[in-house]
Image (cartoon, rainbow, N blue to C red; front, side, top):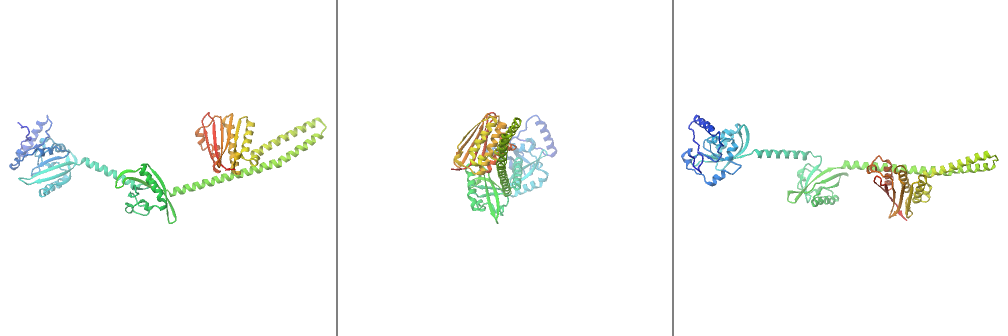
Length: 516
């Protein structure tokens, strides 16, 4: 019987044939029980000098530490001792491993290296380390072997085996991640830098500003920025490290009379390994073309705005000229025609002729009224004679008279002075706003308020109509609203529209003015 506390002993066959038969018998015997993977020893069958060797409790405990496989080989490279982890790693029942040459687990292409390692270990005093592949159940398993050899009373090889499968997999994943990161950084369209809180360049992905990566690394970003822009960049950098939020700033560099704009986009500061502590990654992009395009677009918009303003000015001048001609020439001619007809009416004796002449005079009177209305619509002379406030009051009374919509006007506009062209533009916007109320709002009451403020005139037009939606207000196809905003913007003013469905609409205008 096997004694408690003693190593499990396995009989050793004396010939290869007998060994094979013994292994087959052991397989049949162990088919119905779990293999014993405890520390296995064949001490009683070793040469006499090794039979007296006994393991201490500390050595036995060392074998149980994992995940490392411990094996002991005899001078012929056969396994004589092993721990549980080694048996699991080699995927063999414990009874089969005893006296099994370890070389059978070494991959074919690694056998010569392993044999050389055994020979080197025999000559070396310390441990010999080697990484090689084992072939276990037709599966290649990378391992690291630490080997020590003792020649005292016989050659004995002690091996520690570490499975490198997970380590190699982790290393491969790390290399793939690094390769992807390197490809991303190197192929990025922007310059990428890592800075500490003092502006020291820790990393840069490509040459920039005529300097290589090696030259830039370790220097200060402020060394490459014009001195006039240092304050702006410092403020941006401090904000990132103080609030741990993103920040952007535009930096202008002038070289050889050529302006180059760069956008510095700082990411939130993160804890890093630098002496300064946190680090921030900044993307540096050349935005010179975008700035040039924006400048061209802005200049084009200014030109279009000036062109539209010139058209409005010419239109107002033409309206004034036509209105004057209609009022002065056509009005006078119609007045003279009426006087002549009135004289003839007094000279006629027959009743029928007098009646016909009276009808002609009435038509002439109606024509005179129509001419006056047309001239007023073209250019109300009250705007030129009395100013913006009275002109708006007159326009409101005319619309109220024609439509029946009650319009209340409250004004103290006489306290400010507005130039001729801004006054005409403002009057046209008020005129169009009141016309829109008549056409679309279905309102019954309108309030027009004009208040003088310091260097400005505030005009508010509010109705009780059906209102409009926010989408209609912002729709670029709403040409009436777009035109009003653009006309007031050209004179330096501002238009805001507030409305809710079924709750009416309010239009507010701010017109630059001079106080009297």
